[in-house]
Length: 284
Image 1: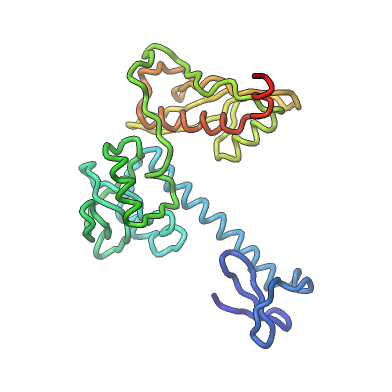
Image 2: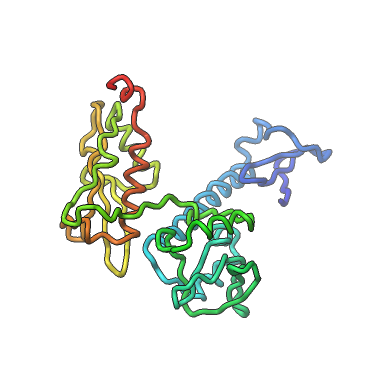
């Protein structure tokens, strides 16, 4: 934290916030009101906002690599690692090498020495594969064991991976069916509340659907939940979950891969969780 002069005071960024101290070096509880428009203070606040956006984008990019099963070149990881925001998003993620076997928890990325990992025996190792994958948790066969091991190591993943909610397609599901009704019927007092929850959760709204895109096995799949396509103050509710290909054709449930299934169910469950419980209880 470096202090810079602003009028008769000094200011700095600490934990994403502008802090201030007086000429005697005593830190103040807040930035004095007379410094609100000081160019230095304004610049620091703009920098803090940019850093926050950058951190969110880094985490979002890493989660997209995971949900789209995208192989990441080693050079990319070693190139971005010095950036604290990227390092924060990548640190402690479970990674696999080109053979698909779990290699360990990512702790370092160096252009000369490759990736530094804590392997499943708790040892520190280094590997240097040309491509690295960040597997979606639904694809990890020993997910529960990895979660337990992560707790023992004190792992704190900023990008959601090991402790991301996962759903497996039930063996008894109708493979020829096209919809899942488990999270349909979640009532919201107003349509705008449902639309707002959708965007707040990071999903897109298109043509009246909440949309989650997944790239799995080289094939693009889109999970969709109907949420309404017009602005009003009327009551709304979550619709059925379905999946479609890039041309908009509805897919049968038997065609849905494990990642697309899990991410679609995750979206539907998250939307449903925001329903109006009070209205639901009154109706019961």
